Length: 166
Image (cartoon, rainbow, N blue to C red):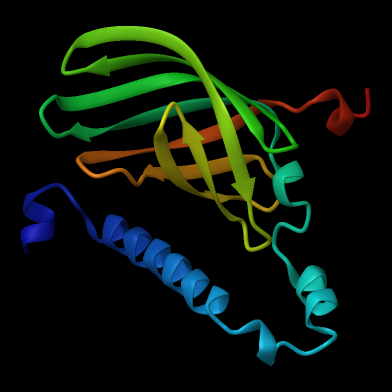
């Protein structure tokens, strides 16, 4: 089987299939005309939402690890931290390796969390799609810009004071 030859096992294929189902399911739901929506649909949707808090789902400090490939550069990897404010703004400090050339920096930008726990982030002109756990403790993301195969995971280290009751 070619997938196994290149290091992709059955578990990787199942994870990819699950992510594709979530992404394509999300697209199908969002293209329904609003005209067909029932008067009570917004209330019902809010009650059934996986992430009813929207952007507030992500609050606090997260650690991040990612790897991939960039066309014209080669292998890339990064580690860092992100702090989400719960209002749609994120700050990201990182150490990045592009084919062995190390750089460090801090960037920031907007993010969005939808009621179905999908979302997006833009950092320094780079675009990412993400899936957030309903409690906001983990984010899995993938870069969506051409020529970049880059994905990673963020795990919450420390919630903001509003979440921990202080």
